[in-house]
Length: 251
Image (cartoon, rainbow, N blue to C red; front, side, top):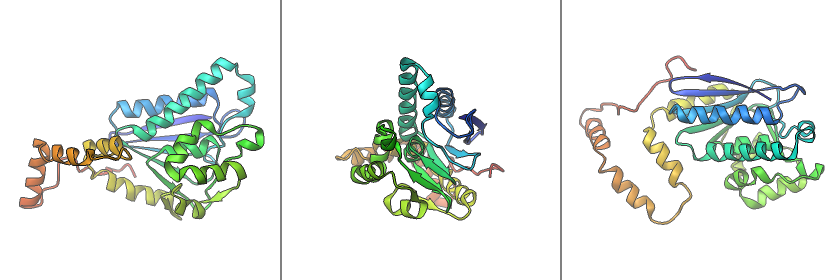
């Protein structure tokens, strides 16, 4: 798998490409490139990270041929790097978006599921074929269970069935099904760039934690001088908050 990166002031875009075997498959080098690019986007304080594919398929999952040729130690290291990449996509203080317009299989499903938002074209499909190869999709289970729950994750893995974008949407595996995914992406980015970056980071940190932490967080937010000044200006004369940003030709 190859990775092409477009670095923007506000938005980073990662494009998955076919590797030597002709598929967008997760080989050790591709995993390293993907994880490195995600880490760089987070370090650069981007407001959003978009992951899409330049091939007909989104991602075919693990490159089994490469896995058999790779030593046990290096392959374990690659899987650990991939697991860390999925965790970072889910927890990083920026919005992460997957745009799926073709087939996502195995680890590719996990890559999409780990993102905050998933846009799917009408021809997108999702499948977990690992059990047919005697494997278990263990590395991506946390991302899938967080998105669709344990029972549906187990069903996908047990049956290996191919799920369409329309079927995946009510499950929560897909957030938006769009005939024009790029148009839907632009709409989402416009909304995301109006969100305060600190608020995005906090939302991702506390989502799903439960308890009464939300009360303390909101109270602390309302004591923040920058936020208080921005809200006062907005209420007084409709002045846009300083964190509002535009795509600036990055559509």
